[in-house]
Amino acid sequence: MKEEPLRITAPVFNIQGYCIHDGPGIRTTVFVKGCPLNCLWCQNPESNSPRPQLMYYKNKCTGCGRCLGVCPQKAVQMELSEGKAWAKTDRSLCISCGLCTDVCPSEARETAGKDMSVEEVLKRVAEDKIFYDSSGGGMTISGGEALMHPDFAESLLRECQKQGIHTAIETCSFASRETIDRVFAHVDLGLLDIKHMDSARHKELTGVPNEEILENIRHICRDLKVPAIIRVPVIPGCNDSRENIEATARFTAEELGPEVPVHLLPYHNLGEAKNESLGRTSILNMKAPSKERMEELRQLAASHVRNVQVGGSV
Image 1: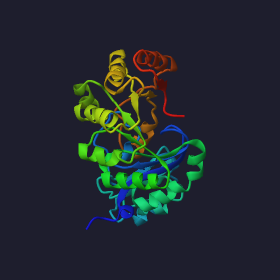
Image 2 (image 1 turned 135 degrees about the vertical axis):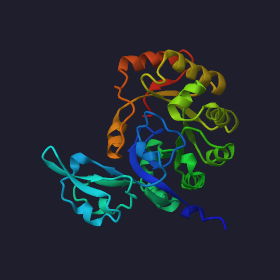
Image 3 (image 1 turned 90 degrees about the horizontal axis):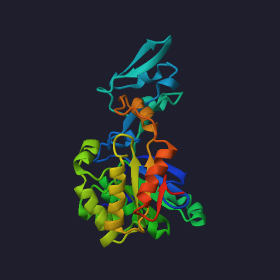
Image 4 (image 1 turned 180 degrees about the horizontal axis):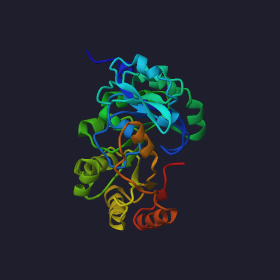
């Protein structure tokens, strides 16, 4: 028997209100966990896995030891460094059960991700409808990758539209054609990422080639005729060459139409602290591109596309 649409669940790691960079107007962005790509620069690394994950902030830890007493896996041990006691977790034993986060008085521990139903998420989204109506905003589903949870995404987007809430999706577009058609039937605006135009380089940077991604983007814009914005995360040394930015702009103008906007999103290093909280070492060590460099790339793209801006929607 088919599951009741409102009861369909997905792992959600954040619901953020009053967003102004994830589509037009004031929006609520729903972040789901799980992504088929593995971008070297990922700024939400807690979104990569669909499973709950422990995030630990050493600078907040008071060394109280409460987490030791509740861990069923005995994964936590106290260590002394720099004259301070802190709780170290053996992540090979940790099952992210959340018991240690429940007892932590300093919020040094949190669990990223919990299963939520469409009904639960919709209730939270609908609370801000007055702001959507007054600003031309709405709900954006993001990730991770929302297309990894097609039943959930389709149901949430459909229910939002029923309530008169504008819908948008942030996506890498790496999914089956069936999934694209199902989900985008309920999308008012697609925020479509293009990481790199060269497929081999795309695979080096993200783990997958780009042919299916580009073909899906063509299909979304040409066949489904869903309004879209092309978003390019500008990562120094990875995809910020003049050749790649120009190739992306030409693809947009020639394959999708010169009226389709392009947003150049400058890299920031917020993901590095998140990697540390997950017990990982960040692969990249770089600075954000300068305003001058971003303006140079904007002007380059603008020679092909009518509407190019630095940063997301405002």
